[in-house]
Length: 533
Image (cartoon, rainbow, N blue to C red; front, top):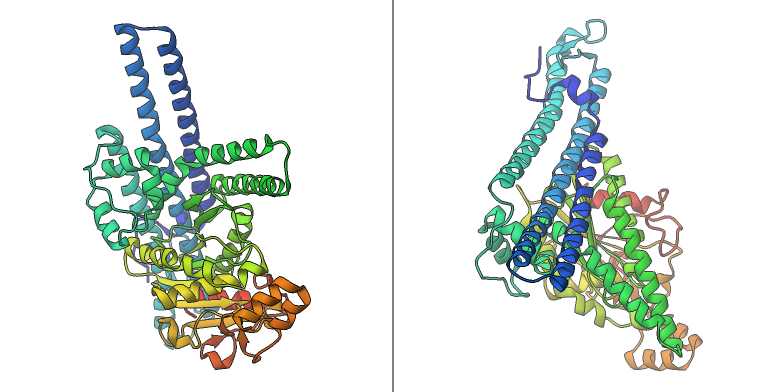
């Protein structure tokens, strides 16, 4: 009995190297940087030309240089899009190969033989005759599933690359209508507006209005990534200018010195983030938002959330900022990797959502103001993920750590969250008294607090008493923490306690920041919640 022959064969899938496709995409992405640099050189040449040459010939030369520069700039999103297509193709090949490996393991376990062409038959020495039909059919079905996924991925990548080739012939960009969505536009309305544009008009927005394109929830992840990557040099320049300004202040007081250290840390963090964005590492990183003001904000997805079947949004807590964005992204990556170990066939994406001003100290973290201020933005981002997703809705899980759990809970309470599950680790309370107040399906609120997590010491002090303690002495502050019922935290009941009414998963003794340790069972808990298992 032979499985049907899809476009991708058994031998081809068993030997294909997804990493080679990923590397090819990355090589295309590197052309974007070359095009941007050459465009900048043309702009400088044009400025020098106009400074010392006038007349009709000079005007013609300037116009030609401007045209060449615009053509180069228009190529940048196309090069990035090629990288996106090939990276997603590689990711789906990884999933297809995982399914193929599972099918081969099933065959070995059940006494079914697979030949090099993908044909399956019973091993008469191992498989009883009464089990021949069901076992062969089961293996054949598993093989078809793997090959069909690879064939579908191949077909989609071919079509997307063909559209890019056609765009190169007909024109990369075209000026769109004058309408622009307002900053507070509902993500669904943004998605409808974007869908009504032609591909050339969308590229025009990416090239000419990357600020707008890169920040609008409801614009697909691919376009936001292209736009925000176009802004990277500008963001780096802004940080360097701030650093030079602070460096030049003489005399330099404590505030200036602290500001200088902060900008230096942000510059280092942005450099590390750019390195990750430019790497061939799988899954590919999508830059969905970047702000270098203050301590910096970043929204980065690992894998395209618009094409994943499970999407995790991770909200970090106190002291999170641009200076350690890659460290926080690493936590999201570890959940994603553990999910891949548990379900190799799954197509998952994890997003670091550092889209708010996280508290810098315990003094700031003792209040919920920053969490309340972040609620609308997180609500809109999750709605945007729903609006831009391709195909059937993904399972969307939002994970909050420490103060980030309060951000998640407050957003769910005050605005609602497009989420199928919420997960809280190391939580000081989430702003509600019971899991049912968070607006997600019953049984889909999960939490864990490590036995040695210092967050267990926090208690809900009276507001006036807390203010007094904070202003008088550290001893008084600690005394304020330790007063109150054992299941109460700063911002309500501990979501990992039975009285909260949610589900729990265990954590080992790894402290407040150890939930992502490879040996901590909490990592399994977060990954299983993401997968819906």
